[in-house]
Length: 404
Length: 68
Image (cartoon, rainbow over all chains, first blue to last red; front, side, top):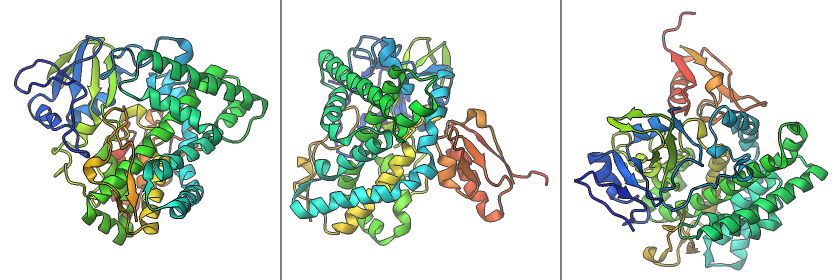
């Protein structure tokens, strides 16, 4: 699928194959050293740019000469646009907005995801984690950590936070999973998107009848003059997908990484004060938004020695940036004691992940409680038998068979 | 040391409140930064610097030699 040439300026294309489960493709290292702002060929036939240095990725994501408008960017891994150009689909999806529209949505939503509020959720998260560990203990060993632990915990938590009935998980998990598959056809994606969209519209209509105190119900009661059903559904759809597809993969892939680095796992078990830095280091080391994040130039921009023309798409490789040796000494080592230092696993700039404080609490509780409950947790298959999510927008494992 | 913030630039990522909870909080209205102590005592000054470095929107400025 990929074409790569380190010596010439002929464009690279994504995805590039990984040669090891935890490391980004080795070609990123060559690009970072030899052509850090390199030409990138998109599947839709256009040519843009790929950034692989930490400093450039951060500079791009903080630069308001670049737009997040998803109607104008090319997808690095698909032939068709990331979002169709329809107002309904775009409503409320703040990830594809620019200021001042983005600012209004962000300000409205951030209060539900503050550090303080997420810490207040910790006891409930501990309870959810504990219930899933109990169930694993009852039915195993062995167990597949993905459906038994990694997927249901963040899914249940984001459902409660938003006010989405968890019993509907089969529907929304199937839809978001299709939407994030690289090889899904345009028809399959658009059918999944329509189904999820209708589900959210129906849910919003139900909330208008019987508003509750969760996020969507609360928005209806406090912001009702400004928010149409379409905007509420768009917010709900984005937060639901972001809330259960990301942390789920960090939990399973992070566990696989810890099991593959027994010295680091031992340190985490023995030193309680590593719990916070371990989460940051796993975020950096694994950087699961594997193809990075995209922007489009609003005007011609001289950027890191190259001229980026108006309308060109720029891909910021978060995974490459988080392995930049200029910023992270020995970047390919998993070092849970590494001082916290500006990783871009959650992005950077105004779009930096809204739910990052929720993700941190979930990871800290889940990794800690998992290894306390099952101190002898181990893989139940060979490491090379673990099916990796090379075929998904969000990296991780499809399954993680474990025993204890 | 004195901490200055530009709340207009803030998008409420919460890195400051996470890194230096005794110095920063987030507003209940819109999640933007609230400074709890703009003149941090010596034992919290390193946290203040780290919060400024980690802020994704360069909201926080640290004036190392601010006059009283």
